[in-house]
Amino acid sequence: MLVGFGIGMVYYGMPLGVGNLPFNLYLSVTLNALSELPASIVTFFLIGKLIRKKSILIFAMLSGIFSIGCVIVQNDDFEVLQMGFELFSFFSACTCFNVLLIYTVESFPTCVRNSAVSMVRQALVLGAISPMLVAFGRTNRWFSYGIFGIRIAICALFVLCLPETKGRTLSDTMDEEEYKESVHKIHTHF
Image (cartoon, rainbow, N blue to C red; front, top):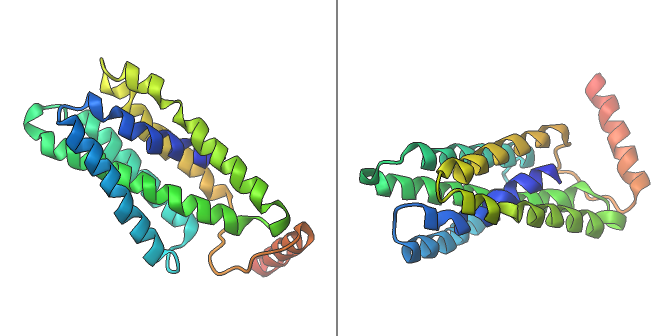
């Protein structure tokens, strides 16, 4: 849920914050909307190859770095660079969003899967508290894009505490999941 909170802040905050950047609002909103399509396509084609934990961590860190880049590059002569940073940050957050939902489905057994996905989805939406940050960001971009970048990077670190799910079979019951975890721990100790 903490990972989802950080991703949700950027996923929902970036489109709201483009008005704080010095380029055409209509063009930037259109490009943000269009960048969700490649993120979905990347997720679709690479999900069989992607390691879930590393993917979320890498895309979240890239999103954080490029979000902070939007703040650092404040010269109006570099509008195109700023726009590229914002688009790549949003693209990375969209990809994180997609992979996180798949990762959540794979992490929980069938008997609690719907509840787990709903809770992660609520954490993503709770991360949408960003309109306040966007309003504060009108005077200083660190209050929006800086906080977005720091938040997604820090929250993504919590994925390191979770097990990898790529290639694992889905469990139906909690007992089956606990058994798989105990067998995995025994095999990693030897």
